[in-house]
Amino acid sequence: MFKNHCCAGRHMPVLLVSVLVAVALLTVTPALAAQATPQKAVAAAAAPQAAAVKPADSDEQRIQELILANHIIADLGVVDGFGHVSVRSFSNPSHYFLAKSKAPALITREDIMEFDENSEPVDAQGRTPYLERFIHGEIYRVRPDVQSVVHSHSPAVIPFGVTTVALRPIMHMAGFLPQTTPVFEIRNAAGDDNGILVSDRMLGAALAKSLGDAPVALMRGHGSAVVGPSIRVAVFRAVYTQVNAQIEAEALKLGPPVFLNAMEAAKVDTANRGNVNRAWDIWASHASGGAKK
Ligand SMILES: [Zn+2]
Image (tube, rainbow, N blue to C red; front, side, top):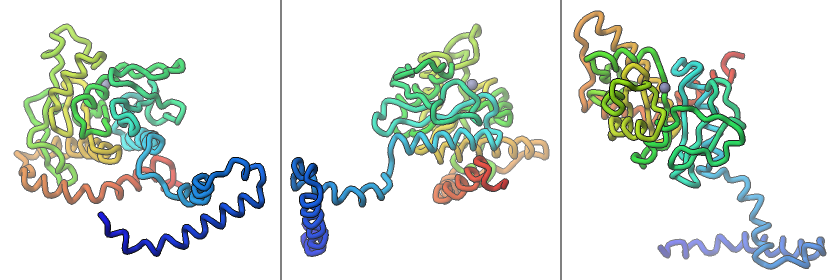
């Protein structure tokens, strides 16, 4: 912990500049001089440098990625007018950000709302939240590893939630899928007389229980919930859950498929995680019109 002592000499120029700036401030601006303390002068000297350093993470950074994530999943057909994506708050991890009830492709900064641990809006400002926001809130409650949740009604995954055919990893980009993807049966939580939609905390908790520690849960007759340790990974998984479902359905028409085994899936998933940004960049470019110009 003391190894920085060997580098103490490197701080001398910085200190010298700070002192010179402090002197300059005291000399040139009498109004500032009246208030200036050595600490403030040093902070003022350091401010331009600090401002140039992009924070590693922040709520605003997450919100900007969330807006882009909405556009990407819409652009790739994971969602249409319905479905949503959220991100956990960085500054208050029991809260999360999610758009108001609006088509994902059209989401802008002013649509993003903050929700508390019970999925109640912190400051609704007249905006109407998604009915199914409890999917997000209840998963965040029990999965501290999850930073982002995508809920979609992707038609490709629906068949695997309504039949005895399991969604399994069949192609390398979907190595994150478990050997058998869990299915949430809402009748087990709400009985036969249910509304299919996850419209309260009890149903959200039941879905989160079905998800367990998996990255994806199918929702019978409805869609799926996909989670990840970041927005980018959650979007990556949502996209390739859909692709895997499409390929599996096609393969099943030809004959019994050979799936990735657990070892293959785990290894290729590790490799893929290093390339999530590569996919994100091209998807973001398309979603924002960059590659279409
Ligand atoms: Zn839904």
